[in-house]
Image (cartoon, rainbow, N blue to C red; front, side, top):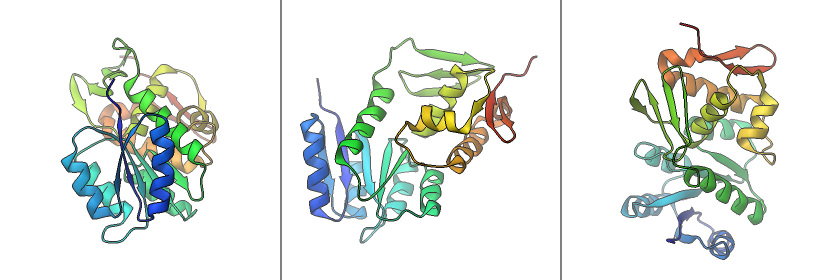
Length: 227
């Protein structure tokens, strides 16, 4: 089986080596870039990169700009690394389509576990795993969403969030439950992370965004309106 490619972007060679060594042990093929400009060159020259691990603070082009450039063409999963713990940075990252956000210093084992979890969910599901509701169709294996037969582009986390909502139709879901289920137990974020994603998801769903009901003071519920 062909090894999955992971692009690691960080201006610290020691950090790249640390991450690379852990990923290689798990049988990933690792590509490295020392700055944002090099990362863009490698990404667009290598068509089958499965995931990007991206540092924020870098020379020539920072991680935010790299993320913008990649997101203009691709929904490849992106894990952002940062030395800052400012939640404004975290929210900006999610606005730009970052899928996971890890603050330095971090455990390489946790990072690899997140990489494996993302790739397992994006590529390891049954081909017939399709959910349908109210004209929305989610194909979990192909990682595709269509509305009334027309394909729409979602980020990895938006896709996960929509899938979770549709698998729990009619059930009131607290923000804590959504965080634990979609962002996993080791994510220490807050409710604004979910609210940001729901706002973007509703926008991309157009009129069908109304299926995601806000339960004030608690969370959300996915419910298809009766015709």
